[in-house]
Structure formats: C-alpha cells, structure tokens
Image (cartoon, rainbow, N blue to C red):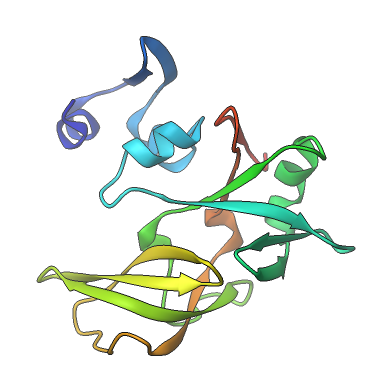
Length: 174
C-alpha cells in the first residue's frame, strides 16, 4: 500500500484492483508506461492528470478536451489508430511533464488560466484550467502568479498517454 516504498525497494510491482492484477512490471515501467488509467492514477504523487477527451473533426487527427481542440502529434498517431473509432478516450499526463516554458521544438502548447497555487517548499503545484478541464502541473518553487492569470502549459507529445475511458486499458504508441 506504500507506493513510495514499493517504487524504492521492489524489482517488480503488482498493482491490484478488486483482486485483479492491473499491471505487474518493473517500477519504472509502471510509472512511465502504465497499462491502465487506474495504474496511472495510483502511482505517483500527485497522480497523473486524466482528462476525458473526444475525437475532433479532422484531418489531421485531432482531440478535444473541454473545448480545446488540438492536432494529435505523430507520437500519438499509433495509439489513436489502435483505439476503436467509437471508443471513449482519456488522455493522461504527469504533473512533472507540464512546463511553463517550451523546452523542445515539438512541445504542444495548451493555453490555460491559473486556478490555484500550492507552494510546497522545493516546488509548487499549479492547478490550471484548460478549456473545461483542470490539470495539475509541477512548477518551480519560485513561480508566482495570481488566480486568473493566463498562461500556457507545454508538454512533449511523448509524455502523453491514451486510455480507453470505459475499460481503462492503455493504448501505447509503440
């Protein structure tokens, strides 16, 4: 039940839900390639952001969460192609993968509005509204802004995860 201890000491971890094994793997695999949205939300503190998304009109392929439509980056094309056309989708991204500044040329930029800052000493958690959804981003402790401030969050497409919203099953790009 202590995920920090399990991640630190274990060679392999079994994540159980309702008596069923959701994933059995090395700690780094469970963290970076969760097999299901339950695993993604269970491992990590704060947990992975999980956003219900829908397919938006394309081409190119696009997703929408809460009124913000964006072109699906090539890193997610295979995962989206693996999802049946009628599947309800959930997008996952860890708080530490959301940044206030563009770090890579292929980063996606999501415009948002700051809702809340939670200073934790060495870091700050920022809750940001993007469209109708809210995400938590891990930002530098020095970041200061007031709620209502417009900002952009940047994320590398390789750090996005796609899940079936009904079964929780992950579709991986590779």
